[in-house]
Length: 222
Ligand code: JFB
Image: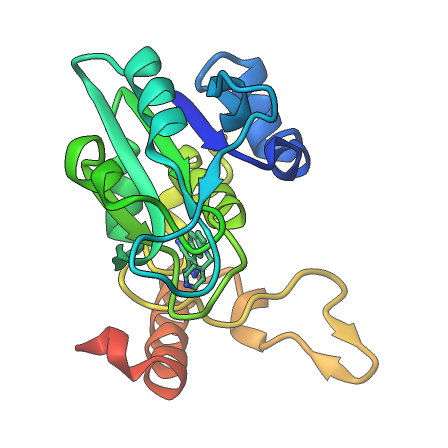
């Protein structure tokens, strides 16, 4: 997969994209992520990317010209252009899996109060929101989006960390998990996990997952 990210704050991506799984999958060539500064697509002396909204109101909007110039330079016939916005469709594990199948993503991070509507009309295929809370801009949302999508690309997770085992993958939350030692500060690991009975362990885990999901996220049970 190739992924081009358009932002006014390219440095926000330096941390998340250069660590751990994302770093390794980039080095292995499984994903090619490029971060572009939208100011590089301006032509005026002050590299202006924002302007005041017609009709008045507080705050500034992103001007259409730098975004159009960037997208028209980067896009191909098979590109999917995504806009991060609080008005977007909720981003879910299912959506992440759909985006992981796209050969080329162009992600527009909004800033200020948002983008000129003509960007949506003419360039954007999908509008996405990572959740019902308010961020200061779209860059952190895009970093979350890319993280969730890239780890679903075949080969990105090693055999040991399979995406199939994740919370949500089976539509349920994961139950409790333990590692050594078998007793820590008087707290015991459940005997069944030490029993070596794989069928019994699987049944216990399934039951714990159902119980935890019912308690914490009954909405997931439908
Ligand atoms: C995304 C953004 C802003 C208008 C503008 C661009 N789940 C999410 N919350 N907030 C955002 C998001 C996503 N995806 C988000 C892009 C922009 C927020 N802002 C700031 C906040 C409220 N209303 C500008």
